[in-house]
Image 1 (tube, rainbow, N blue to C red):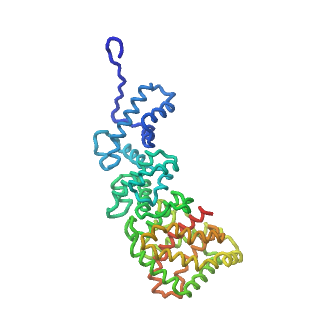
Image 2 (image 1 turned 180 degrees about the horizontal axis):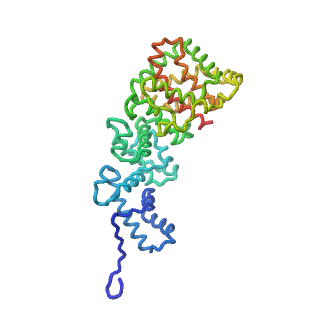
Image 3 (image 1 turned 30 degrees about the horizontal axis):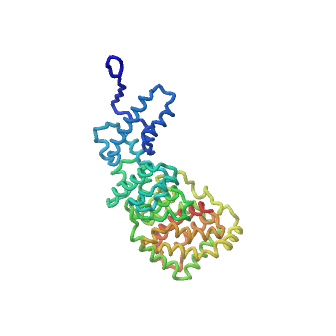
Length: 420
């Protein structure tokens, strides 16, 4: 109080409301107001702002964020609320920042039941990811909130997330993949799977959603039951008759030795074949499901795999030494996994099963990633050429076969890259 009883006040008035992006980030990362003040003192030491103004502004900002948080939980009401008027562009920025997440945090949550017990035990996640506990809780709560909102909704995951939370397309796509992995409770946290990154699982989820959910509908959380049923039947077609396995191995051997097998060929042929066979679009390609395009993929004639650049004799010798002894085991394991996917436990364990029953035998036999890509490319093409399988049966199952192998090809090649 100044002399003469006059009170001096610092007053800050802004219309429209001004939100400090830096303070918002401090609030999002879980800083208390005291922690935020320490950060601001350090960052704004060269400014003309007094300590009192920084304290007052920080308190105002934290109060605004507390008011806005209710509407950030319910984004459809954010635009209509009049307590804190916000420009549309600022609303979008706030939403995308509030629903942002750390890959390391979400990697630990993938596949887990989003229960109160898991939320209570986020201390380990916080320590492992080097992210504050409060920040981990925000990210956990956001995933759970989105999962609940779309749990019983009709239509595709992305459409429902966008309609309810008004997020940017990129953020929406990421949450759709996260909800898919958590909703189906895929096992992602076994020690053997620890080399696989958040990005790896986003790719796995994308290609699974595009190829294994109901055909002709927007990708959702539930897998196509008809597809899973056909996979059970397909196992018998391929593995019950030894003559089929012998013929398939012969085709794969010849195809690989001739140098026809390349990763690019797998991508190109899968695209055209799935489209011609009834209806999967180019979004079902490995690596394209995250919202990208094929513009960065050169034609197969331009992108030749290391396998294709080998000589015929070298390829023949490698097949005899590495692929021939494993062929029957790998194919039987691959379609044993396929036949079990209609069972929830088997579905949850698909990543660990692919690693243990397919990728690890390849690694132990010293397969390179290029060799695995070539093997899968030829295996993908082999079904159409099996004369020991009737034309009617091939026609009945060829799309199912390809839908399955598109996903397996992407998952296993990425796994092998990470565990080599």
